[in-house]
Amino acid sequence: MLSYILKRLLFALPIALSVTVVSFMLVYLAPGDPLNAIAPADAPADVIQALKSAYGLDKPVPVQYALWLWRALHGDLGTSISSGRAVLGEVLGAVSNTFMLAIVASLIGVCMGCMLGALAGYRRGSWIDKIATTLSVIGVSIPHYWLGLVLTIIFSITLGWLPAMGAGPGGSSDWVWDFEHLRFLVLPATTLCVIPMGIITRTVRALVADMLEQEFVTALRARGISSTAVFRHIAKNTAPTVLAVTGLQIGYLMGGSILVETVFAWPGTGFLLNTAIFQRDIPLLQGTLLVLCMIFVVLNLIVDIIQPLIDPRMGRA
Amino acid sequence: MNDKTQGSTSVGYWRLVLRQLKQEPLAMISAGVLLLLVIAAVFAPWLAPADPFKASMLKRLLPIGSPGYLLGTDELGRDMLTRLMYGGRISLIMGIVPVLSAFCIGTTLGLVAGYVGGRVNMIIMRILDIFYAFPSVLLAVAISGALGPGLSNSLIALTLVFVPQIVRIAESVTTQVRQLDYIEAARMSGASNLSIIRVHILANVLGPVFVYATGLLSVSMILASGLSFLGLGVKPPEPEWGLMLNTLRSAIYNKPMIAALPGAFIFITSIAFNLLADGVRSAMDIKK
Image (tube, rainbow over the protein chains, first blue to last red):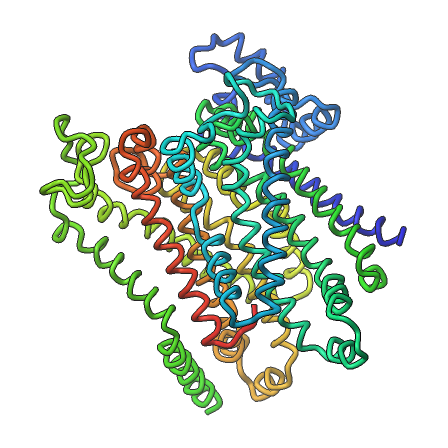
């Protein structure tokens, strides 16, 4: 087991490193001199020179990358151009908001998906299967930013039940676990949960239907084991796959919530990315991308490590 | 001689798939809906009732069903039906082109990686692994954000998101097929590498890649319009569904139906693509 974990860690390392390379190279993807992204257009020559050496732009690219990486490893992601504050602080605050939204949404989505998928897999061809299949097709096809808009129209504007925007009363962005704040979470979380729900429903339905036809289930039933016990066997066998999909989905939601965050003015990483892109704040873009991708890499790593704990066959492979 | 028998069976296979597909009602309805949307988009200049850019301050946000404005008007008094028809042009292009180009690039790269194998395979696949470390929406947003807003930049960003996924499939099929006996036989009978790839391997690879790519169309539609919604795609006043959804956000309080309309079109297109892809998948009998 220990060697398995070590092996996974070794696999994750080059991936993590390449993520830093891509995040760093974004500066060079941006049109024009990378300095344009850092200095204001009307900066005097001596300021530009000072900035050049401050950012190490007068050195060759690999050296620049090494310096950038060294600083990033020490928690220095540079200074945001638009706000003038340290990027790391900005990103961490936003990441916690996004993370909470993504976790709540995936938990709802996974629970709903497992339930619908299991019911549909057990009762294939029944009305519940049809409902589950329809819901899952809608879940993976709906543009979630539009769903967010529609939910806002229904529940905030027409019915007036829930707030349409923000993450707390009075536009505060500091999250507290109380009823007032939870009301702000309902619509964005519902909007986001549709994607994992659709995908997990599909996955679980296929897995359960597939497993019910396998010999071991027939054997269990022939031995007179109760249907709850049979279900336990099936649940155990679907768990590793569901876990893997869930891990990926949390990562996708964290990276992909930018659209939903824009709709609901949620003070998360989506908001930062928006600012970064439209104010050409490249350090902020780099920093946000880097932190989000690192979380994605770590999430994948955690899934890889947990999986053999649930399914011992994987650890031996 | 070998070439001919192979060629004719592969044509027969696709014809069989098409026949199978025709028996899937949902897939056929979806295909019909998509056809209608494409026709409306392509022939917009002739079919549309108005000029998509002609604004009128007096006719802002007319409700759906107003005389002369079947689907109402937008925040600048432009005819919604017209703009939705014209919008379909860019939206459909933005949805389909990235998948098409990723299909071509990805299949080629996958074939090369799988067929040549060894170090070339390792280099191509390891580079593409990097892209898997990024959630796809984030990757698309970051690339088009760095490149700057614009239609072609969004197309590039989306293509880059899809290429690695297609390469993986093409590569794994090619690697499997390459080791089969009949490839060895073809090589011994003197077939060149190029003709082995073209005749024997491509026929095996195209199926799974095609199924996967049709499934990507709906993702691509949602992502492409999403980029426009963020302001990263085409610029106003160009009609595009995602962008229209964005500019109409100010209207959600007084004309919610009109504000939601462009998104409904994205949804219809995406669900039609998805159902069609499901149909194609089961017609080709490939398990997902």
